[in-house]
Image (cartoon, rainbow, N blue to C red; front, top):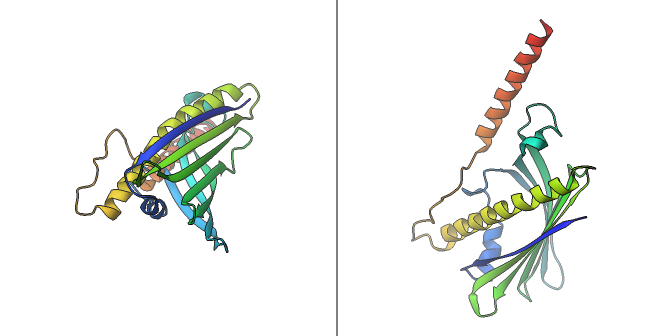
Length: 211
C-alpha cells in the first residue's frame, strides 16, 4: 500500500528566473535542515536539455514512536537523497525527481516536481508537486506513510517559501526580503552541538551503569 499527495505552488516570477533561482536556493532561512548539497553529474544534450544529479543530506526530526526504531535517545536522523532533474529549454519545462537512498528498510519517499510558465500569465510559474510514500516496516507501514505525507506537506511549503525568498533576493534586491515567519530554523552548528551534548550524556550514563 502507498500514500500519495498532490499539490501546487504559484511563483510570481517568470520560469527562467525560477529555474535559475532553484540552483541557488541553498542556504535560505527555511532550509536549516539541509546539511549539504553536491552536484555529481551535469550535461547538456543535443536537444537543449540540461540534465543534473545531486546528492542532498538532510536532518529529520523523528516522532516519539520513531525514536524507538533507532537507538536510544535519537531525536533526529540524517537522510540522503538523490535529486535528478531535466530542464527542457525549448519547451520550458523543468522536472525534478527526488528519492531517499538510505532508510529504505523503513520507507521510500519519492517526489516529482514540474515547473512550467503559467498559461495565463508567463510572468508567473506554476510548480505541480506529487509525492508517493511507501512504508516497508511490517506493522508500521501505515503510520510511516501517514507521517511521511504530513511531514511532506509542511516541508514542501517551507521549500517553496525558501525559493521565493531567494528569488526576491536575486531579482528584487531593491525591495526588503519577505519576512520569515512561522519557522524555527536550526543551523548546522546548533544541530552538531546538540548531538555532541547527547553523546556526552549517553556516555556519562553508560559509565554510571558500569560503576
